[in-house]
Length: 122
Image (cartoon, rainbow, N blue to C red):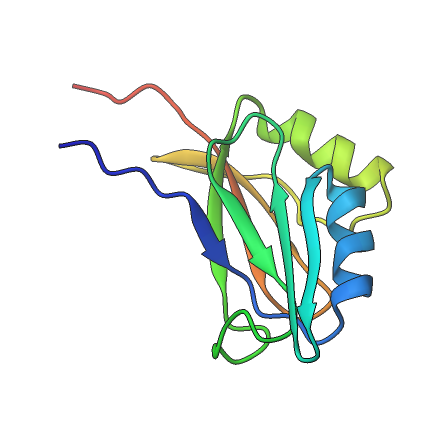
């Protein structure tokens, strides 16, 4: 039986500010529904991803700024440069035995780790 992760909550304090931030990162805004007062469902998808994130009032009980998500990219340097060019504060490249990383944090403190996979030594 296949099981595919579809949607991950990212707790934010200001939905509109978060939408603008994630658009600068390069995420697509798939849905933005104000269902009722206190419930707004915004689905955002990173380019090339089969999994999306959800932000918005009433979508999670998680504390704002507590989410940490890792994404795989073809090139950590290219991801770093694109984020930097789009005005996103991004860390220097870090090379570890299990991958090459760069990181950024959204305005609420949620952390994003971008990993370039490296060939495993046998």
